[in-house]
Length: 249
Image (cartoon, rainbow, N blue to C red; front, top):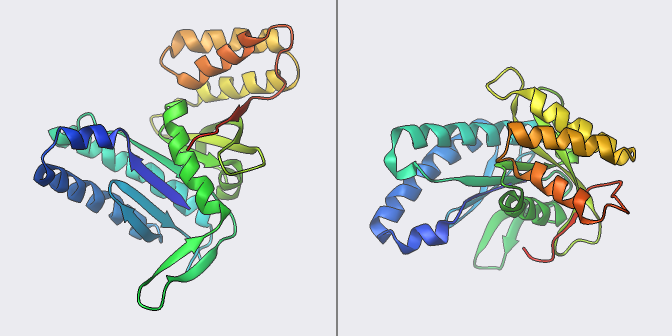
């Protein structure tokens, strides 16, 4: 399951004429939907500026999770092209969330109106992950199950455990930054993973030192700042796991 949304779309809509807004959305949606189709996905719904899509039904795919992540990364690449070539998109940003799991797929609705769609906890969690991209200020968040099932070839970092509104369990999530051998430097993400391992091993002093060094080289990285804030919140009782709980959508 994939959810994608334009950041601060409501504010943009307030200062844009309906005609210009519709033209922008049509250009954006054309680019994004084309990628979904090319990766074997199904566009479930278009919700204003939001897109809901899924892989693995009605046709079988070898690796739906990999197809979904590849789609998301290509969507971000296409957005960069729009930002570069079209001034309307210069300050436009999106967030994407992906979750993997069992859902019910079929014609949902009433006797006179129905859609081919999906329902289930996996759908809800993908939507929540998309929303959490704002909190962590990253473009793509996926469940660890998605990341593991997709296999290798990506550059990413586990951020810890999250509990979102409507769920009772904490779920590990991963920030996917790109593919291996592209323009993304894996060293930063490897060092971040080292810091998380140190926290889990109880070596908080070394973890803090590692994170402070990362903060110097990447001062705009929000997860690094969040980690340092959590470590400083209660020095006498440092966490052994990074846990985040969200009571709002």
